Image (cartoon, rainbow, N blue to C red):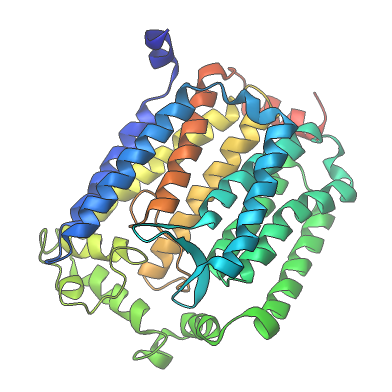
Length: 374
């Protein structure tokens, strides 16, 4: 049985993830006096790999059962409410449960659950999705956690959840008229958030994104130093442990938000290309499995997980090279932290499990099925 499961799972996906993990660990060891980052990150990767294998060898078709999905979704909302009262404030956001030796951020797991919930909802209504009521109901599933996350406030994570809903709705067959309605709603929500929800430091980040040089010593400092770190790495980098921007603390949050800049400074343009190639291969394999999902649920979950990784990748690297606002979004499998790594590993484990019973079919057949022609 173990040999059979081993042959069914697409292990090339892990082949793409392992170099990214090594890149993360190498960066954690690059700075004097910060060896605890390496030890803790290695621990989280170990726990995450166990969870990945558990879900990979499970038959995750139980996620199609509404009882499990709804229970997990409601529990996640309860945690988001609870963290507003009992959470620890970190960098202006009350997003963490602090247990002394470690912290837990429920938002990371909520993102995976939103993917499951939306995949479940759209898979049952792929023909009726043209009706606005189903679009509205699906939006509520995403809007409730979005609002709770915004109250923390964590604009970056709220943006990712919104992107998940929008992307999965598009794949499920949203009409052009509904796209206009959705975009209008996003503009209204952003305007209201700007007026009543955004903290001054979040507004400053958006303003510094429009003109990073306007406040280099203030809100634009991190982004400016990140760009310097990336550029100073050159083609081959300065070498492991010789990243001056990071070593000398010119680049804040090098192990979390700006890990890509720290890595690029030490490994250079070629090292960055290797990491980006691994991410590209990983995304490509997930896309392939989305096209061969055993049912609409598997296809939509893989699409959602693709959007999840791609959104984090674009936003994080974008803010590291100065073309996106600094939102605190981690780089998957690379930024320091346990919560997001465990959530990413669980999501990847579910994808690997789905590869065991996928079907061989063409993208056009799946598109016709979503649009109601098959």
